[in-house]
Image 1 (cartoon, rainbow, N blue to C red):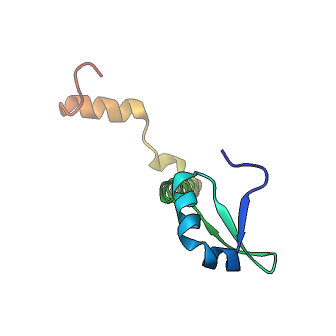
Image 2: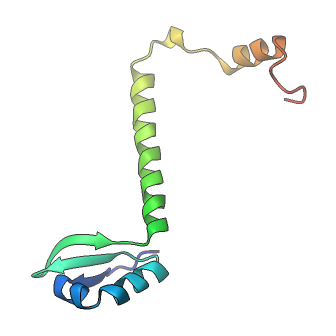
Length: 98
């Protein structure tokens, strides 16, 4: 969980303590905001948290694309689950206990 006040490091401190900073980032799930003259210029975060964030973002984009596709599709183009299920049963493509 993110804290209310994120961890920060100045660019100069980061340059001096690069090894320690990355060691802390690797251990923690908290991002570290990089500041240059008290302005946010970047963020460092644990790789697994970054990958998790990317997956969430990709799922979000997929949802937007799906919503747009549904919006732009005619109602007659949709097929009911009941019809799909029956068609699959007829072709023996559905498990018997389904």
